[in-house]
Amino acid sequence: MRSRRTMGRGLHRRLETLTTALLPWAVLIFLPGPVRAQSSSLGPLGTSTQNPLYRLFYVPEAESADIVDAGDYRIELSTSYSNIFEFSQSAVHDELFDLEEMTTGLVLRWGAGPSLELGGRLGLVTTWGGFLDSFISGFHGAFGFPNGGRELVPNGQYHLYLDDSSPPVHLRIDRRTLDPEDLRIFAKWRFSGSAAEDHALSLRATVRRSAGPVQAGRMDGAVALLGRLSRDPFHLHLAAGATTLNAPDVLAPVVSDAAAFFTFGLEAKLGERISLVGQFVGESRYVGGFPATELSRMPVSLTFGFEGRTASRWGWGLSFAEDVPPNSPSVDFTVDLDISKTF
Image 1 (cartoon, rainbow, N blue to C red):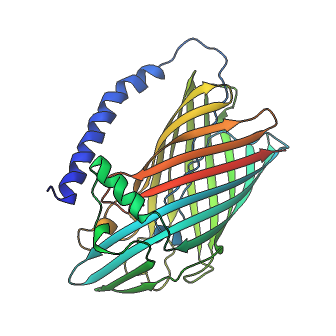
Image 2 (image 1 turned 180 degrees about the vertical axis):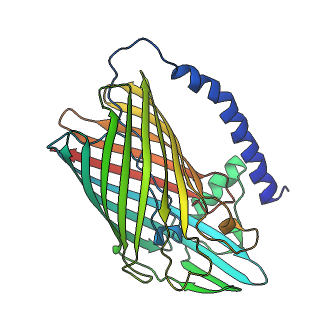
C-alpha cells in the first residue's frame, strides 16, 4: 500500500496538471471582449480555515470585492460544520486533534457611502466528539484517499491537545458550547469598478479581538486586496492579504509574527439568481518548529458550492470543502451553510 505522503504527492501533481489545463481557458474567458451589461455576481463562497489551532487567531473568510449599496444594511448568518482528525508524533512532540466543530458567524454590514462598507462579526464555536468519523473513513476509502490514521483510534472521541518539549508547548482545549470565538470590526473601501461593471477592486481592513478559551483579549489586525473580474456568465474572485498573529503565551514559541493568505474562486452563473462556485482558500503556515508533520505545511481548502439570491433580497449559500493536499492543517471535511437578508 502506498504511503500517505506518496498519495498526497500524487494528488498534488494531479491538481497541478488540472490547474495547468484550466489556466488557458480562464485566460480566454477573461480576455477583453465587447462591452456589455454584466449579470450581478453572487460569490464567492464565504468559507474559511476550520483548523481549531488556526482559529485561535485571525483566519480570513472569502469575501467579495463588491460592497453593500449606500444606505443598505445586510445581516448574515453562517454555520460551518467540520470533521477534524490530525495526528502526529515524534521524539519531542505529541499532537491529536480528533473532534467535530461547528463555527457560527453573525455579520452586520452597512453601506456607509457609495464606496465604503462598515461592519462587524461575532463568532461562536461548539465542539464535541461528533458522529461523522465512520462516514469520513468510508468516504476516504471509497475514493482511495489517505485516512490519516483514523483507523487507529475509536470513532466519536474528543481530543484537542498539542505538546512539544523543544520549544515547550502544552496546549489543552476542552469541549466548548456556543463559546465566543472572536469579535471583528472591519471597513471595506471599493476604489475601482462597481457591481454593475465588469470589475471591482477593494481594500479591506479588519481589527480582531479574541475571546476564549486561550488568553482572551488578544488583538490582531489584517488587510486584504479584493478583486472581481467578470465576463458573463463567469466571475473571477481574487484576494490576497496579510494578518498579524498575536500568540497566547502557551503558543508563543512556535507561532509566527504574521502570515499571508489568498483566495482564488471561479463563479459560473446558472441563472439570474443562482451560481455554481469553486474556490481555493489558504494561508501561509501559522506555526513552525515541528518535524515534517501536517502542522509544518500550508492549509489549503478546495470548496465547491452554490450561491443564490431571491427577489426579496434574501441570500443563501451551500458548500462542501475538502483539504488539499490531504496531509496539511486543513480539516478533512466541512459543510457550510449561509443565509443573509439585505434591508
